[in-house]
Amino acid sequence: MGKKIFSGVQPTGNLHLGNYLGAIKNFVNLDNDNDNECIFCVVDLHAITVKQDPKELRNNIRETVATFLASGINPIKSIIFNQSAVAAHAEGAWILSCVARMGWLNRMTQFKEKAGKDKEKASIGLYSYPVLMAADILLYDATHVPVGDDQKQHLELCRDIAQKFNNDFKLENFLKVPEPLIQKEFSRIMSLKDGTKKMSKSELSDLSRINLTDSKDQIINKIKKAKTDPLPMPQDIKELDERLEAKNLLGIYSSLTNSTLQNSVKSFAGKNFSEFKVRLGDELVNKIEPISNEIKKLLGDKNFLDKILLDGVEKANNIASKKIKRIKEIVGF
Image 1 (cartoon, one colour):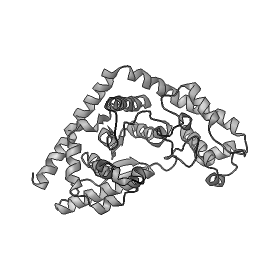
Image 2 (cartoon, rainbow, N blue to C red; image 1 turned 135 degrees about the horizontal axis):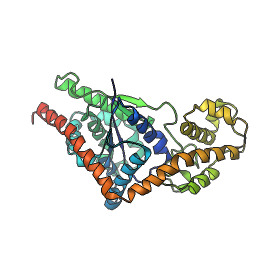
Image 3 (cartoon, rainbow, N blue to C red; image 1 turned 45 degrees about the horizontal axis):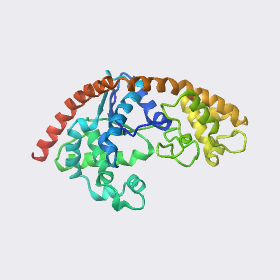
Image 4 (cartoon, rainbow, N blue to C red; image 1 turned 60 degrees about the vertical axis):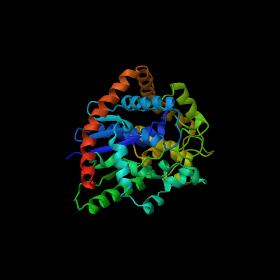
C-alpha cells in the first residue's frame, strides 16, 4: 500500500543546493513512485513568523513552485498549493493549540536557536509554529512526513498532539499519527566556506552556497573557491569527522551520483582536491544547470505558476475542509 506524504517548504526565495539535496530531490523520488500520494505545500503562513516584504513574499511563493516543477515534481499527479489559501490550516492550528501543552513547546530547541538571546522580542508565531505544522500534516491524514534532523522534534510534537486529541475525545485514530521519513545520509548540506555551519541563504557570502538559479560559470567558480584543507583527499571514511569541509564536499558528490560516502572516499583517496573539485563541479553543472534554466523560464510566466497554485488549492481545500468540519463538530462547534 502506498504512502500518503505531506511536506512543506518555506518560500524564502533563493533556494539552494542544501534545499535541493536535503529535501526537494527526495520529494521528486517520492513523487515518481506511483504508489505514493504526495502533497507539497508552500508554507507561507510559516514564513511570516519573521517579518517579510509582502511583494518579495509573493515572488518567493511563485519561485518555490517554479523550483518544484523545474526539479521534476508533477503537478497533475501531486498537489502543490500555498498554505494561506486553505483556511483550514489556520483554523486547525488554533484548535490544536488548545490541545498542545506549553511544556511540550518549551522543549522545542528550534525556537531557542531561531529566537537567539532575546527571545522576548520573538513573535508568538515563531514560538507556536510547530502547532501550525501539526495542523498542516493532520488535516490530510498523512501517513509519512519527510523530515531532516532539525524537524524530527516537531514531528514528535505533531504525533503527541494527534494522540492527545484522539484520547481527549475518545476517538481511535481519528487524527492519523504520522511516521517520519528520514533521509539516512546527506540531509544536512553545509556551507562551502565553513563545514560547521549549515548552507543558508542568510549567510552573507554568496560563495557559501550553490543557488538553484546559479549559472554554469557561477557553480564552477564557487566549487573552485570552496574551503578545503592542505592535505590530499581522505584515504578513509574515519578521517571525515576531523575534516568537515572534505566531508561536506564528498557528501554532495555522493548525493549527486547516488553513491555511498564510503565509495566516494575510495574513488578519490589520496588525490588532489583540485582534481576532485573538477569532477564535483561537472556533476553539479549537469544536475543544477537544467533546473536553473527551467526556473528562469517558468518565472517568466507568472500566470502559469498561479494556475498551478489555484488548481492545487482547490484539491487541497477539498480534503482539508472536510477534515476541519469534522474537527469542529467533535470539539462542539
